[in-house]
Amino acid sequence: MVWKFPIVLALVVMVVLSATSFAAVPTPVVLTNDDNPTAGANSATAFHLVTSTGALTLIKRLKTGGTGLGGGFFANSGTSIQSNGNCVFVANTGSDKITSFAAPSYAKTGNAGFPGMFSANLAGGSIALSPNGQLLVSGNSGTENISLWSVGAKCLLTHVADYVPSMGADVFSPIAFTPDGTAVVVPAPDFEGAEIFDVVAGPALEDINSVNWTTVASCADGCYPTGMDFTNDGTVVLFGNANDQMSSVLSANIGPAGLSNPQNWPLSVSTSVMCNPNVPWLSQAGAAGQGELYIGMSGFGPGFPSGEVTATFVESPLSITQEGAGTAISTPDDILGTIRTVGATGTGTGGGTMVIAEFPNQIQTATIAAGGAITPGPITTDPNGGGLLSVSVYPNTR
Image (cartoon, rainbow, N blue to C red; front, side, top):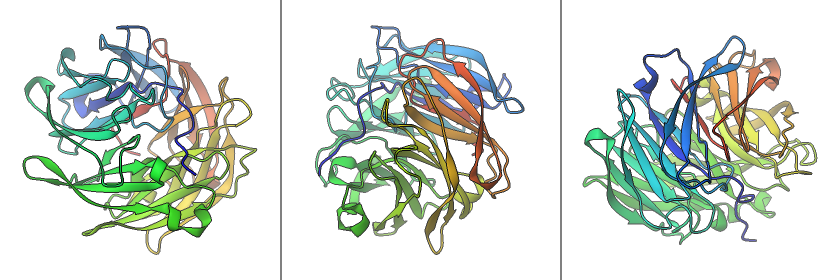
């Protein structure tokens, strides 16, 4: 069965935020994708997170002059934070532009893009910066390919090349660099697979190989890779599974020959309690090799509830086991986007704050408790939000 991500419900105004962007304000900072489909009204909004209470205080709005779609895949990786503090990039998936902003004032410096790259299939797309901040990749769900861009002076983007993974054209989103910046991984949900490219001199991307979950017996009902995260050493990549009838997390190994060993890790939570495990996010201990993995259950609208499930992740030998019963999170639309954490130790004893994007214009924070539970905290309305699905946090302490 060929099945795309859940539904087209939120634009992904993509934002890649440089680390010292908010050096003059208290940290941590939460950056949203406002996803405003009104012509020319798109923006991204920054908040300060008070970790002791979970409260968010508005800091700044970055106006792109572009337009959002008001729809897109739940797990689009619309926000990401770079460490050098020089640039902010906001992708407007309705007007097919990536807007750049430069420090210290974060004035708009330019736009880059091409017709239909995000908007053609009304699914949006994703962007991500390399760890050194010199390259940006976009997963173009509209034109069903991926693009490589170089980052230049004043944060201006130069289009390098477009690539169609060897698996074939698909709605390639999200997209990400490996932690060391030497490769790019992109899921291909319609093919139930994922592709990896090496970053080579030029710069350029070189297609290495792909893996496919159709060969995994427990994926008979469909394994559709979506939102992803990596271990710190870059040897394991985790994907959500955009299937509202089966709750599981997908994994693959990364080595010199590319991707290998696709596996499916079922969760014990009933899909009637919460469903659609789109967004995996590792804790500090998990990313280091053994600790908690947080899974955003995106829901699928009324009747398909949303929430969060915690699992215990072990890198070697690889295993993922659900921890606790999960926490249902009720929202007006029963749709969650990305989840991120601040200070999530992930040792099972509790500690840290979770930040959850709630479509169309809210941010839910939660305290991470012992035994895999979370305690929901304040809900903040993004006054500029029109289709909020993605958040990023600076600094990225997990």
